[in-house]
Image (cartoon, rainbow, N blue to C red):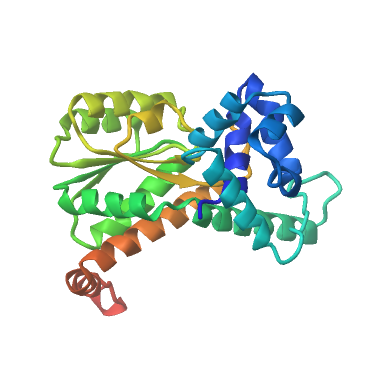
Length: 281
């Protein structure tokens, strides 16, 4: 079953005028909404059946029936009310509050990211990486940390990778990759102009593109051949990318482990041969 509430939470910030009241109602009263027909739900939220169906499809469901079934299933699995913890840091917080809030936010981001993983999409990403001659990695700011982490992991498997720290070098890399390679682009918002520029160049050259973004339809995901989503309780305008960074690193760990498993004996052998011990230094 696809997770409904996480997808709604991630989509909330980009909901248009007609959808905002609908999304708010579904998030605030999921148990009540799960019992309603599409027409009653439309009346309660001052929308229309067409608006509800469009939202369901944007969230990855075939229609309202699948959406409603998934919502009912998710509610049934709740053994107790979700613990309501404000993770925003306030002026009056002590050190213990900071420890608890930051840790809780990280745990929640990891759990929600797990719920967003589409296994078929994950396998498609692994297959594309397997076939690629070279992996080109793209990201700026905190997303560059994720790109660099993926570079170091696949380097240990002797998989040719390119990861440049400055955007101009990434732009050159985008121009030099071919359809026999693959590009992995990291952008939590999916709106980073520099990454969009690289993605358009890559698309023109028929280079397969894997994107790692928040759960939302945006120009970057529309250019992608494969999409991996991460969750983080952060606004698009952020003072610091904390939970999103942890979510990105987690999805890389998942992707890397799935890649190793795909050709287990060979990859484990390579990992063992690339272990650096103290006696080498």
